[in-house]
Image (spheres, rainbow, N blue to C red):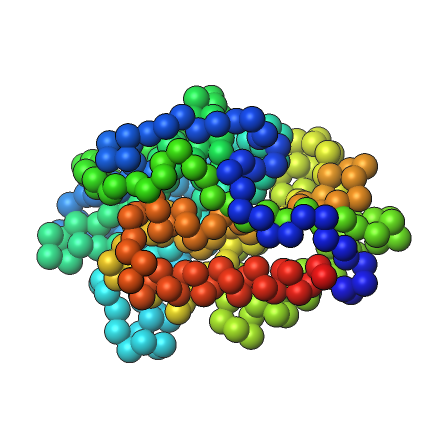
Length: 325
């Protein structure tokens, strides 16, 4: 397997993402323009649940591909939980995903999008955290004025208001570090000519090795999207030989992070993309750096969660680098 890979560019932290060169995120006020938004509603009767929220998202065209009750594994693994309810969910809209990937090929790093759902047990409320338009723009080095990005944000707000009719966005006041920068980890791997003749087999070989290395050290894949089959083919879009995304999660990471930063689920599980364009002997891989979490939420380097985030990122980078060497 490793013989068919040679590195063109390895694991570089970039300020822009492929397909959007030259797109700059406008400077933000680090205290007033937030990257993560929290929508809260009273829930004394307990009628709002992760399942009813999922149904509301589905009803407006945001398909929820996974809605995982994190308390079950937390109880088994750590013998405790932080909230009566804590779920991580992934969602996407096929039409907007296609439009954005056409313009910004590496939008797979935000496909699917994610949200955390948790209870404030003292106030008897339920909260949902998602990325704002500014958060998506910053993460992907996308123009914050992009009409499709704005439409995506509007659809998310519509879903939230459908799910929680009496809810509202609450003030967060996180001081965003380096708000003008985007953080991404990207690889561009040159493919041998022989392997390029059968891109599907090439992809499957890579994925088998990737999954085989990741799973034994505690990484889970709660969602997987074959963009070509699920989105592109139906739209008649044929620019890629393949385009897949994984949602990646690790209990040892999200458990300590969620205790102090439950809204970090707007970034988790993280989306890892891999694609090959027709006519190119290159595969593109990448995901958003954990610095997006850390700097968006102003997390302290002393937090256990930060240490776990950085450890997990290094594991993923090491595995990909080993495969493509």
